[in-house]
Length: 113
Image 1 (cartoon, helix red, strand yellow):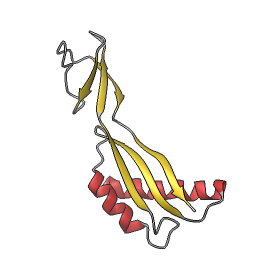
Image 2: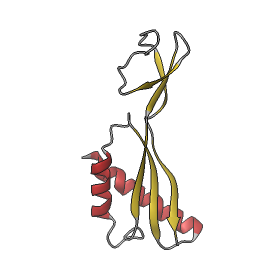
Image 3: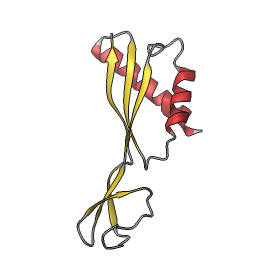
């Protein structure tokens, strides 16, 4: 389950930010999670809850904002919503797409005190 290692990385980022920005507790972690990221949101929440005790995030809630997959078709230039990396353009059926959104996992902002 790679979600556990992702949560450990999130916690490391929180600790670095706490040192730089001088806060001692995180109460909310807001993440952008792309539908194409191959990360299961429920597994991520479970792992986050499992590793947060006795850390600066022990009272934190993990809030996940799902980001739909989007691509730009190189053939017709249209922006399309996609569900997977193998989808075709819904306008011209071309498979020649550039992913423009939905493959990320990013901390959007933190609630701290």
